[in-house]
Image (cartoon, rainbow, N blue to C red; front, side, top):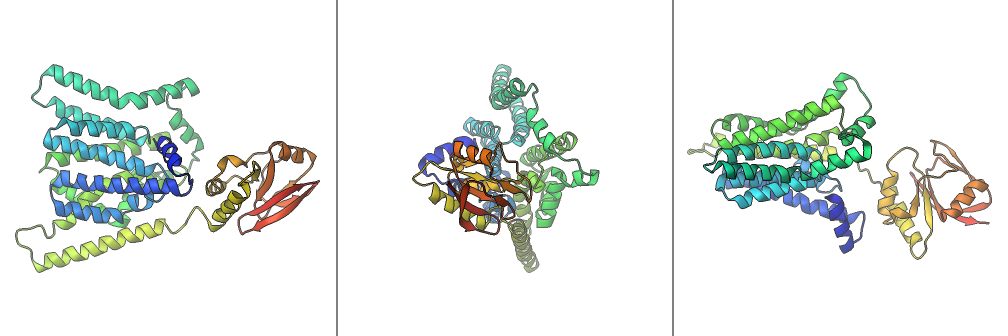
Length: 422
């Protein structure tokens, strides 16, 4: 999904740095609106929905991922959208809402594998609701079967591609597992989605939404359906990833974001219930104001804590800007030193010309604190690849052969040179 959206967006406005962030912001707004509607479908209370919207804007899943060019915000939107329109259908019995829910789930399966789990359990509650309707068995059978086929199209196709390409149906999990470095049992528990969920929501105080879930569980069938979807996906995902080791190698906290987001309406419902009474006392109003301020503060501090460090530095932006100008009007390329880290990708993006970089040379291997020996073989390779610029780490020494290097820019993290062949 993201690749298709980017391909379309870059035809409208080509900026590898700005355009993806604009798209993320748009989908962040869509996610917020869907979350507000989900709150209304669950509680039928406009005040709770408004509170949900306010806290959603300063809550970690939306405020962070609305400015990052990552898959999460699209996954959040289509997951929340599918659940919201399921409850719209359940409340109104209009099948248009059901098909919107199904369409959202189908798109969601093309974004992240976690969406497959939400799609499966959403199908179960949809099938259960249809089965209990006063319809003919033939109608129930065909519509449930049709929904199952629609929801399984992309996962089945992706599993098929996995099998014919790698010889196994779960290569997408195996590839993650192969990149995972085993830790102690305690570390693996801390990196698990369930633990991350508890950590994120306890530190933000969003965990108080669990109290609302418990108090409302027996009173409302919508809440029971929501709890089934919420709990089953979180527990199954946590167990599967723990057993299979199919967990990311960094930023484990992001795995729990979708469940944290889904818990938010219940947190706001719990706060609003302090004043949603027939007789409102001054004590209740004070408790509400204090709870509102404390929750706002904890949300904002959590966002500040996670946004303190930027993966793109001033040096990355400066080097990208320099090379973008240097590339203009010619077909030259640049060699970019990797040295085992991923921050070189920032320069590919900020330069707006990622295809103009060479990151691997046959006659030179990257090592930390290495010396770049420019001998005849390397010069020949430079010429064959039309390399006229070098982007090197500041600690890399250059042993010059039959070339001259002109220093364009010297920064803390990168040095940029232009090659003059003799």
